[in-house]
Length: 332
Length: 243
Image (tube, rainbow over all chains, first blue to last red):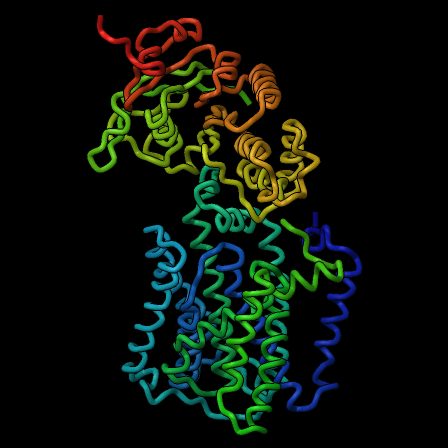
């Protein structure tokens, strides 16, 4: 069976048409949207992408990480630092960045999984690693210390070095998000993916039917860290600045978790739907807070949105939409 | 699929000084159905967990067809050919019945479509095929017990450990399960060791019975022998007052 047939097997034709239409729309969106619209869509795709990366760990393998900023920060800093100090472009630096994040993920994962830390205890470990990496970067001269690292803002288009305007960054993040969507589908339709779901549901029962639990969890954190590092590299070159206080912030780690939680943990579309809901409404509330001169309205909204979702749609927005309109991902 | 011989050689396990199992030895011949019985807390499940790799025995060894399996991780014990069910059932709740069994089938059939087809076949045999698209958490207890058996069988074991799969079943359901296991054993030669309190099932299935009490083996024999074994009667019915 070809790869394409495997990926699309069991998916209703209308869902495939819908996906194709969505992709076409996203491809032509920059021509239809203004500058502001494009910047919002970029944010949506960014949160959809990191949400998908985080979802592999929590949604698929059931491992709660609240320290994913670690991988984004390490990835971003390394790629930006290599470019800043040695002129090594991100097209090459990204490999070092991803390798470093995977190494970091392996350390956190091995310590947590080898000693069977589960649930909130594992989450605490991920927070701890993210926090002391933040402190280390605060004092690391090469990375600019607490004063931050700044890339020269350069509007000339240079795709390999990720230098250019919003349009370039839009298509890069679109490619990352779309590619990861396909990757997640492929993973879920593989033995590894099913083993993850089994581990999420019951690790002891999974191991009894031959699932190598430690190995599967390690692969999950490594893939998740690698993808999150890509998001970090993209983010560093998009914003051109990096500060330990924000790159490794607890708040950033939590931000990564919101789209998949709100959209629907463990689903393919959850992180995307969640990113649309959060970013879209987040923008509205940012505008409102400017109109009414109330700062922090967005944060309050985020809190409220989480509260409402957890109370009324604990499985997330996407499974609810999917059920209602009958184009759902079926239960596995 | 054929059965493997299980040998327990003087295995023991203590938890923080509490002696749960002490010096238990017995064999289950290839292709046999044997039972492990004893009062609650006798150490039956601990013995199962030592066979299945959940606990490493403090003493002694467990061998499957002559190969030592004690001390291996549970997934490697499964790899060696041991399938087990849990006394307190452990379905993958959020997954469908079919996907539950598919996870087991993936162990020896890495391609998802083949694993799923094999899982569907096993569900058919266990009478769960109609419910294959239901979430496992929506099953009734008897069906969950059946699902446990199906999932373990999907790993194509040579030895099947059944931990109280009859508990909570109605007499007619017990008979169905007994017939299924007999048929399975006859057809495939699968070795089965069951922990069971339902004597109706034990007597119908087991060719040999091992009795444990307070972590030690107190008797072993055919069902007829065990039924009139004085030490067993004492354990189950209480010792007679000394005259």
